[in-house]
Image 1: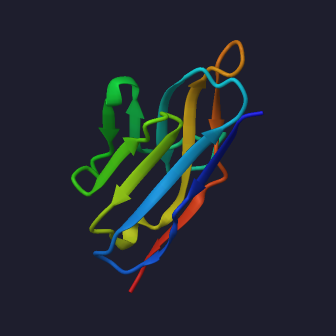
Image 2 (image 1 turned 180 degrees about the vertical axis):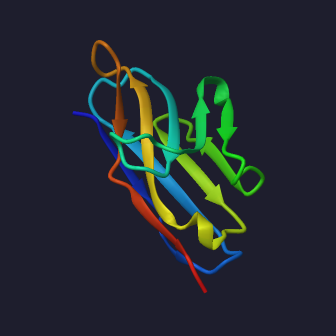
Length: 121
């Protein structure tokens, strides 16, 4: 059973910072192709915010590039997103997606339950 758990959301004022984390756990996870943050729920057309793939290749949406930084932990089953200079329009529920998790054959994608980020004065 693979689980994806996000943490670190909360309430912050405009211009502030938050750091989100995403951890993937389970038995016999041999690899995870990529991990990313999305703004819409699983099963719907997710809006990519930031994504990190093998060899730490990163992609960002235009709205967050330069303000958000995504990284993976040494074990490669964790992901972090540092969000700086937050704006009210960044408020949303953010979902972590783990792509092609090689714990089953064939590998599957898994989603977390989401973490709320609210930016307001």
